[in-house]
Each structure stands twice: as structure tokens, then as C-alpha cells.
Amino acid sequence: MNDYLHEIEQHPWRTCVDAFIGFSSVFTLVSAINFFVPTVKIQGALPLAADTIIGVTYALWKVRRPSRIEIKPANCNTVIEVVFGDLFKQEGVRAIPVNEFFDSKIGNPVSPKSVHGAFIERVFGGRSESFDKQVDEQLRDVPHHDIKREEGKSKQYPIGSTALITANQDRYLAFASTRTDPKTCKASADVAIMWLGMQELWRRARIVCNGQPLNVPLVGSGMAGIGLPPRSLVDLMILSVITETKSTEITRRIRIVLYGDRFDFPDLRDIAARWGG
Image (cartoon, rainbow, N blue to C red; front, side, top):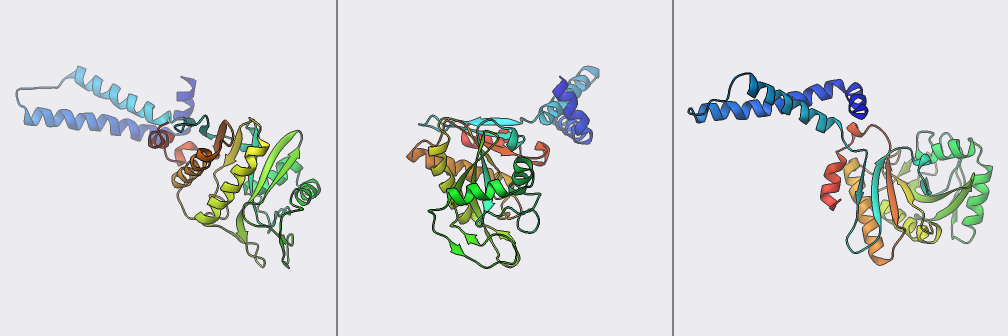
């Protein structure tokens, strides 16, 4: 009950609109029956009360949108969880989308509003020395190009390059998922880049996770958004997980972590229904 009250307090207008929609739908149906079937008369205080209860029930059903769902693909042991929450508070290995230079300077190269920026600030306190050292060590055998830039690092790695970063006994997989303009530092991506980045992430996660959950933010929705609505991005990520899992299991639980108000996002129940969750 407290959850319902909290949601109503957060979205009072939306709750009232949903209650009216439920009430008016039933009222319209009853009016149609009374009009087309004159021998049937549904009227009075009792039907009105029932209509009101239905409207309120519908509003409560709408307002209590789930904050998490589980999808269990056929013929595999992996569970895909879609949840609203804080990526950095999830149990297990956490994936961090970064640009192809693995930049670490907050500002023009790395936006503080991105998951990449939040990672540098929250995990390393804005100081990048440890992150840079681990990236260089992890990617020392990965072919790269040296690109002259006005800001940021010069080593440009292939999309999908993944570095295991440890901090405070937590483990993170930083994976290259965006292109970056050397002059403007503007990040960009498309579906092909997103798919390749995730494909390489899954392959590295097989080695690193060792049975632990893998937590991944909504890839493609940040500063380098690829132009797809959030629901399509979730579908694309789920499809990528299923495709890769059919080959070889990644880990037992993969958690897609969504940030923000779930009322600004499509109902997770629709996603669960589409994927058989």
C-alpha cells in the first residue's frame, strides 16, 4: 500500500487521468448497452459505485508499473533482467560504455552527464590516474591508431575493445561503444557500432563474470544516442544477449539497468510480454 501511495504522490495528475479513463470506458459501455438494449437498464447508485471502483482499480494498476521484469529465453539458463535503478549499486560486474579513446578527462572529452563520466567521478573521484593505468595495461596488446587531438588521449582502439577495471574490490568492464570526432570530441554511434560493441562485451564477460551477474546500462541512449526510442534499444540489447547466448552462455544473469522515472519509459510489462517474460 505504501508503494501505491508513493506513486500517487509522485504522479497525482497521471493517476487522476487514468482513473477517469477507466471510469469513462465503463460508463460508455453501460450507456451503449442501455441505448441498444432498451430492456436492460443499468442505472442507479450501485452501478455508479461499481464504475467508480473499476476506474480507481484501473488507475492503481497503471500507477503501479513494475520497476523490474525477468525474461528467460528458451533453451538456456540465462535470465535477462530489466530494472530501474542505479548501475553503480547493482551486485556483480558492471559494464561501462566509453569512447574508442578510453578518455578520462571530465569536460569536453567525457561528459559528466554520461555513464562514462559518472564512472570516473563516482568510482575514481574524478582522478583518472588509476583508470588510465589499468586501460593501458589491459589494452597493451590491442592494435590501435595514434591520432593527434586537441583534447583527450591519442590512442584510438577498435570498437568493442574491452578493459577490465577494478576499484574498491568492484569490477567494471569498460568497452568502446562510440566513435569520437578527433577535433570536437563529439561522440557518435549507430546500430552497427552498438551491436559490435555489445558483441565484444559479451565475449569478454564470459571470461570475467565467473557466474556473477553482469550489469549493463541502456547502451545507445546517452550523449551519442543512435536515434532509436528507449524501448527499441532495450529490444536490441535483449536480442543481442539471446543471439550471443545461443552460441555460448555469457553468465547466468544479465541485468539491463535503466535510469530515471519509469513513467517516462514504456511499460516494462509490454517488453516482458513481447519476449515471453
